[in-house]
Length: 256
Ligand code: NAD
Ligand code: ZN
Image (tube, rainbow, N blue to C red):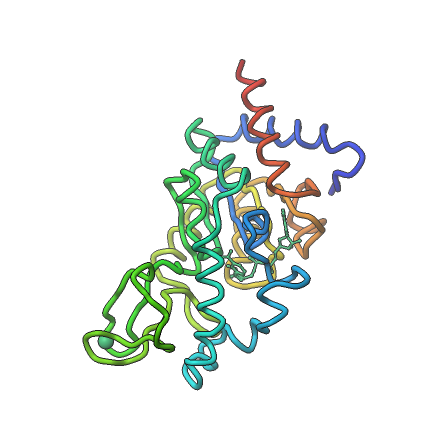
């Protein structure tokens, strides 16, 4: 295993060669890819998650027992996401897809920034902030239409509590997203693992599954993770918003 420190340019060139040589490449992204859009990850100092402990606020039992408390956090998160724009990392992944070099993005994020950055094949492993779902009757509503005047918001059809259509801790992964993701992992020959601490399962099982199926695993992260040195073939250490555009630039040079 190699950590790219002094020789980052060489490791980027190596990643570019691997991407160009790969028959099928996928990406797994986590909260780290949206940090440069101003949405803090669970580790960022300050910001949303120092105010709200995710274990306390993002657990389904906490939501069910005190939805009004959980909705304070959700409101802040939704406002952050609404004000955020895709950053160069999201856009670079969309470009790789357009060049025919990236089959799909499996994201643990709920912010919709991959789609807004231009990616088409996006599998939302943990759902999306864009929709609200009624816990009583299953009614769905676009979150953009929410005024936040009354918290927690209630279903216009049956008055039960509305919940964002995201996977809280303690909830199952949407069946189709999980199936498609595992299939992508089993059939790819390169997975880019970007901005995830790789500790939240079952998403964290995707790189090892790809590896077992013969794929290369390339991490892009500010710091090593539990995959580093065990599952990853190498780590390109640094910010996704800098590294991914560099990769796209090198791919273009490679193709020219
Ligand atoms: P995490 O917060 O546990 O880990 C983020 C990882 O990204 C860390 O390893 C960190 O070193 C790395 N990182 C931070 N900034 C980076 C940058 N600029 N470039 C590259 N790497 C960077 O996030 P996780 O692994 O995704 O797990 C947390 C869970 O919480 C997930 O389910 C996630 O979807 C959810 N969450 C989502 C959002 C969002 O939708 N934007 C935000 C916070 C948390
Ligand atoms: Zn309802």
